Picture (cartoon, rainbow, N blue to C red):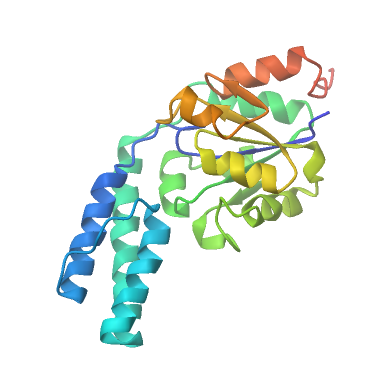
Length: 227
């Protein structure tokens, strides 16, 4: 029986609108100003790449300049996320889905590498629907580190073996598996089925609404309270 569901946000509960290529280009342009050369793109996610670039700046220019670069790059990332959030929106099924799960007594959480400001721009009443909301700024470590999942479960006071982590990206599956949870991939983001299947989620469905209907039909979710 699943007693808690931890959702990713972008691409899972909301339209995925962040242009990560643009974000990386903006970070690269800033890094070039500090390094005096264009940085090499290594395929790492932008937050991890930012830390690598800051280390390069520190090696070349010292710690103070590295801290300055890191601070400015974070502002670039935040601004890009907010621009995207203003163009985004929740999926039509999101609020009804969360209401249904809450009526079943399921603990609900959202973990995201996105910023609090960007998420609240899209979902200003998230606290009404989710007992745990752990954005990048509040995370002890961001996914794919399982600590991100554990932090949400601590807030919800639910055990990992009875929790399901749902997301549209492989790092959601990696984090959920490492935390000892059930995992589900959804195809409502940018990752295609073969790529998401390669992470071996326990479930793979078109979106979170289809997933919850399947789980309810299988008896994996508690029944909604009557009356």
